[in-house]
Length: 202
Length: 202
DNA sequence: GTCTATAAGTAGATAGAC
DNA sequence: GTCTATCTACTTATAGAC
Image (tube, rainbow over all chains, first blue to last red; front, side):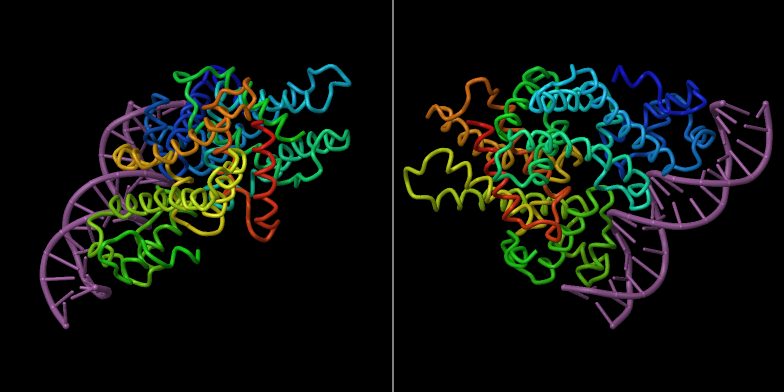
């Protein structure tokens, strides 16, 4: 994906290292954690497999970094979109914005983000542990969005706020499983998701 | 899961064969397709790995059967729930029922169903091909539910019906990733999902 | 029907040349 | 920095005893 061709979070940027990370993100987002082979990553990055070990100490290190980049990029993109709103934007409009930004990253901007949502549940415990605090921040962002809407009286009181939040995030996170640009525009999905969430909550 | 202890779709029931299928469903639902090892299945079924080959010709055959059973069980459970409704039940109440039945199978009744939703996207093409027609039937069931609600004027016309259907199913299918019985009751999740879907659509 | 022993293939990782 | 060659471990699958 286009936006992934830029920075990858390393302090010492290297074109080869970035190619490897991009390739790993792509393979992970398509095949999943266990089926991701170093040989496939290497081929896509146009190097031989042992070259990966010059940049990463192990398969697990490489994958962990892809996941960390994906998680951070997802959160930052959504945060930026929210920060760009005029002060005093209504809570439901802020939720709309978060829905749109999440889907854009997930479906259009970043294989890294897709790699995270499709594989987080199947990672070994030690990798998942390293992603926990960053992940909690993103969940916290959504929790605050819903709490602010609730405080403004915009959310039906019969809803369990945690369940509602996870159901909404699930609807968004599941989109890579079925959406593809050839059958329906991204705009349609985003608009339908906004409408579904807005009316579903309030 | 309790309900999985019964029939598994074979014409010649065998206690060992069923134990193997149950074990495979459990491992698949937890670890995912590629990380599922025959040795782990065998251990859980309390046999040695080569015993699996008495009942299944290959790893892929075994996994394909787990998926087929899971898909059929999910559809049949939701169909039964709908069939049990009084004739003339309102379209939105039918959708409520489908949401409830889907979540019950997914979270409470069947590792087979969870194995399907968590792994369908990562199966090799030939296995997925074998599951296609059964899968289309279940998607068709949901499409008809939404079309009937729309025909009755109960669904907002701004919604793309396919996108709405997949977003709703995504919210349901994602639940195994975050729900567990220790943090919140199943009833809360089901009630929140019903409310979210009902108001989200109409 | 289920086992032990083992063959055949594949994947991650390392050694050492260039 | 990146390669070729190779080691070791693991996984599916088969052979053949019981």
